[in-house]
Length: 471
Picture 1 (tube, rainbow, N blue to C red):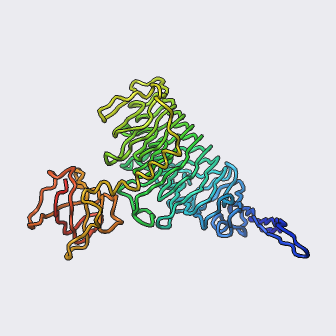
Picture 2: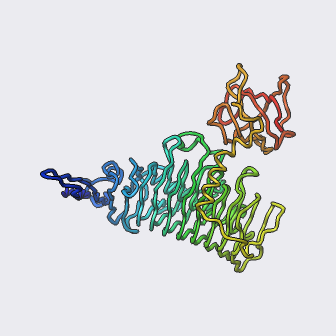
Picture 3: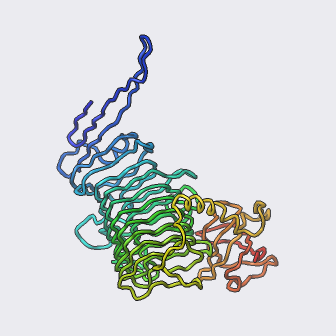
């Protein structure tokens, strides 16, 4: 069955399979798939579908085919595909999607979606100004509390010119794949127009602790974006990390990529603030920071990562910069034209070019063990036992957190009567003690404290009272 439209054509193929026949009775199973052909609207014909309209029609197993041309459109996934029957959007590299005015050009909220062989370009007008760039190019985020987003495949894509990060995977994005793609020119806002930050990752996996629960996440749960595979890509950010993995995200495999153009001396070509991630067989060259940076907010963040079999050429501050310990396999890397081999603050000398001792751990085993570790990590931090945290009857809530000791008096929440707060950073501008007198906060830097409060306004505690110093 074929339906012809000027700019969109839906071709639906009917496949009949005879499953059984007994006597005069036959059983027929009918399976449908569709190809939805979409072309840009700048040719003067508006009868066809937009990409978003095509997504509303598409069902598992369907393909949306993009004709060559420029698409001034944003689009967002509508429904899940199925394992073995994804919803696919494909075109050619001459099919260029530049956005239609939203900060995110492509947003994926559903599982089993495939993006193949087209271009996402955030530079949407000829002028080279901050206003001529979209913020995010491909933003992948689960939108159902507690539900993993999985089965996304990004293959053969050209993703370029982002104001912020080029690609983002967050909120329980698990076992997805980005491969055979070119990702370039990320972080234009900060690195070209001096916007004051350092945002400009090629691929950003997970959620920083202070961002949990925000920016479209359905709740404030720790983001376990685990088991994703990033391989065989060419990444030239001209901004920050080629791949950046945040606290809480584990078992991700980053392999066989080319990484260059990173410009932040305090980070690296690759970065893991999560645990148990693997960086292997990559080429990292001409970066300002380290080849790979390891370590997160807490002592137990950014540990047990593997870095082996990579080639590092002309990296700025060492092949490996490890800021937490212990780490996993860091060995058998190749150094070319580098002045510094390793830069560490963990009290241990690393030998990233030395031989690996014993068998390399498999990604599957590491993923399983580190996910289990992450799921119990927050409970182990709280030294008050396993009883529910209880608050006084006259207050709105209570938390246990560690004071960071920075200028803003941030506190990292490790347990809370409101579970949504767990893992967040909040600001404790001032507090009283049990006697009602003001408590100096600077001497408490690094300590775990129990606080009751009356409200939280703009990430700041109001009516905070320090009940006890836990340690």
